[in-house]
Length: 425
Image 1 (cartoon, rainbow, N blue to C red):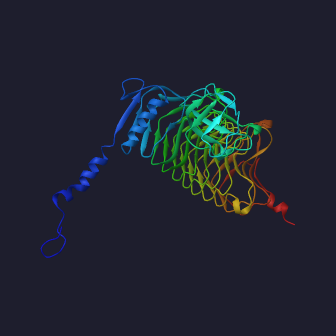
Image 2: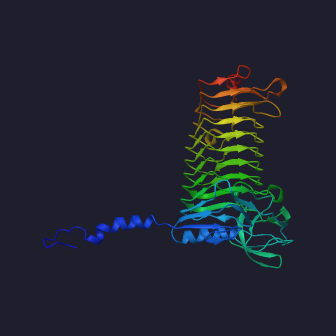
């Protein structure tokens, strides 16, 4: 609108009200309650939960509140962008159903959207499915949903990621992440307990699955969740930037406790516990950079407390307690200079009583890793006699670059082992 002189007029009354109207509309995002009773959507399995999530997502986002009780998961709860999923604190349990497994009767070809099984018992429509062979693995495993079935052939919701050959022990199983976010933005998951059914399911690798799993899940928050007894990793997020994991517990899972990986930038993992997992407590996989890992407990895991490696640079790990793990307290993995975990800082951590079989270090630096700073950490073994396995405070292996030690309290019986000096001519 122009005034008589050709200058822009002031906003109309309707235009002046627009920001207020938009704000009011944004404050009215829906909340839907799903539960076993007294809920908007009644149910006790993944179908009811998924219906609530999809409904809210179709309205542009909002919150799904899950009531107390146990919910049987025959497929993942598939997260949608801008949706918060909130359980009832300490009372909402998502239990992974027991899994079926079968060899492939025919090869599954890359891009195909079906597989033919030797025995399709238990592979019902709507169940989650994973497909792999011994030549594939990691991201080449396919995880999908069964969309149809005729005899022993099942159709699936996405194309196969690879060729799976029956001669290479190709197989399928009804395994999947219990909670899964793929290609999502702005999701939150709060106050859920994941029961993984480890003894009733085969293993699913952490690149394609976990109790809680994100793939390209940007700006996600996982808060006050517990994942236990999953036959795989507890919490895994891959190619997912700006993820925050706070006050979560990952315990007694077969794989890694906490697994940020595959180029996940700027993660924050704070106040979490990884305990009794079969592999490492905290595993920085490939290209995890500019992360903050603080106030976590890494306890009694089968391998190392913390493992850092392939291009995992510029991270800060502080105020963590790393204790009673099977291997080294903190391991910098063996990588060439171009691929090593440079410029990481360990600050004010307590690293103690690690190692179960053979001698280990509180911190072990392998490969051509450089630019590390270890400041104000406590490294000790308080066990008696032959029970002491953490026999070295800091072990710097021969190919490592510069390492700065500043103000650390290192047990006099462990000390620093610098193998770089011995390697010089």
